[in-house]
Amino acid sequence: INNELQRSEKLEIISELAASVAHEVRNPLQVTRGFLQLLTERYEQEQAQMYLIMALDELDCASNIITDFLTFAKPDFDQITELNIYDELTHIESILIPLANLSDGVVSMDIPHDLSIMGNSSKFKQALINLIKNSIEAWNGRGIIRIWAYKNNSIVTVHIEDNGVGMDQEELTRLGAPYFSNKTKGTGLGLMVSFRIIEAMQGEIQYKSQKGAGTEAIITFPSSK
Ligand code: ADP
Ligand code: MG
Image (cartoon, rainbow, N blue to C red; front, side, top):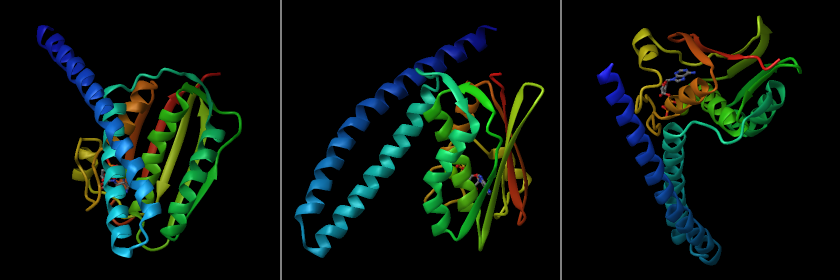
């Protein structure tokens, strides 16, 4: 028990530290981004434009990593409201459609209008966007993602199924571990953050996958009505 206590105390200190460092670092990044953005509008020269755009990309990348750490360190939400699953997922879909189109795939949704859970809207979106983005990035060739949801015994279940590259048992057990990524441009932080958000919303997540066939994420939350 003593050990457990020490561990949780340490975790809390680390979380506090990570959150404050993340905050402090993100501000100057955003200011720098603003100045670079201004320069892209002033410089006509093609070469200069290219370097500026690359610098902006790298800054965005650093910013995203920091946002992930911030969410991981402090997943507790300031604003908890009743979230309508249909509304939330429709919003998420509209954000992800350009990405899906770029990857030559389709997303289909089948969600009743009357499902709701308690949580923070932006954190919920962040968690699900990470999952669906992974499905899009797993596509090879023409991709299909099916998303459906229902309520059963006061539990709301959301399924996200793709026909992408899939995972073997070893990859499945490593899901959600920090820095586990098979992508050249991946951070391996997305699922770590999503799992943490889902947990903070009293939810659970489970994965089924088969190499070469596809992947299914099954997420459950307590229903709010
Ligand atoms: P990242 O996307 O930056 O690699 P994630 O934490 O989001 O980090 O995902 C970790 C790894 O899990 C991915 O690199 C990928 O190998 C695997 N993965 C996650 N979701 C899927 C999926 N739907 N299909 C296939 N592999 C997946
Ligand atoms: Mg990801």
